[in-house]
Image (cartoon, one colour):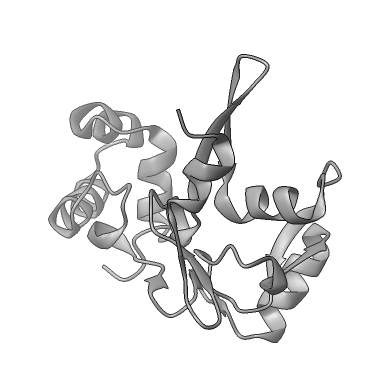
Length: 165
């Protein structure tokens, strides 16, 4: 039976610069790695696990950031610790923030509308919902008929979501 570290390394492709996680990816391209400690299952981001096996424990509330801006990278030479504010400052200084969404690295661009991994509606639904409001239907009526929350209806109508439609 392989050890936890052996399982981890079996999912890493070491290139000349980044060590890329080849297994399951979470949203925005971060590697996902699960392991057991004292009978409890731990779900961790792969780069955080890499930090722990190379550098030790991560203090509570501290982030493991990437110098390479590649979310799937687990190379400890590309990782550093920082606060939430450090993470935001790093993102902004490197131009990784995009109005209305975020992108992490070149490959993992934030998708809007139907292209988003969690989308339950399509552009045609949005057009119909907005038309229903113009036609005098209440948010409550629309929410029930479309099987969505009143909050979702409000955000669609006020263009807080689905602005591009």
